[in-house]
Image 1 (tube, helix red, strand yellow):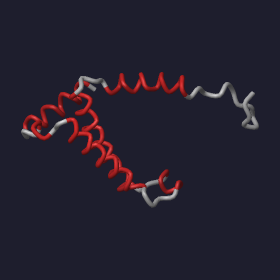
Image 2: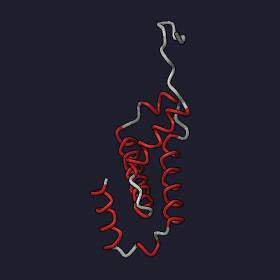
Image 3: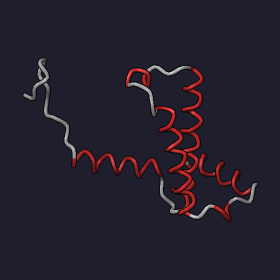
Length: 110
């Protein structure tokens, strides 16, 4: 993660884009990129969304890349490790949404 953040920081610095990268602008750009990912799936059925074409998969990958870049840049602005943040959130969610004890063969809790 640190290596990726370093590469992104260097990319931004070489283009003198830091002046435009306030947290507000970065979060807005992140939201736009997430919407672009959403748009790919907008009119697909559940089944179509699970079986995309090679071209659609490539488009999904590009949008995920954009999202990751903006998310990493926002995280770096606040010195937050996104991997650590995700792990902390998983722990919190496990408490908030505990897994069922066990399911029987018929799908009921035992």
